[in-house]
Image 1: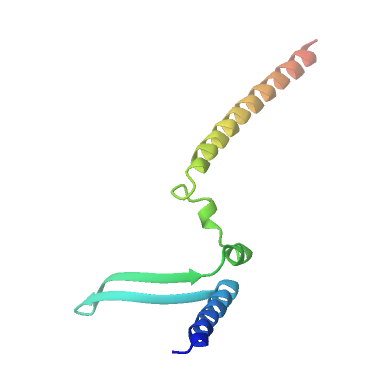
Image 2 (image 1 turned 135 degrees about the horizontal axis):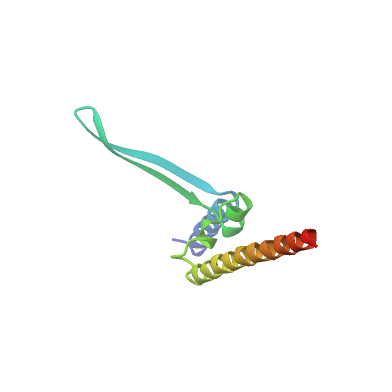
Length: 108
């Protein structure tokens, strides 16, 4: 094999990979298991291959919210929930105090 041939193949592979990551590639398929014409199991397989930039561009960013992939975010989410509860409690207390003041002012 001449020296330049192997280099040409790797360049072609790089070009194909670059195009796939830039444009994206979707592979879809269904597997169905049936017995006596009764469907017992269906497995739907959807595979998308693209760059992270392309995935975010088309609205696929599930890995940002998956607690298995980013465990630190789960603690942050729990803290956000706690803070929201505290804010609701403070808002209720403030509304209650405001009602009491307006009622007391009306009685004078």
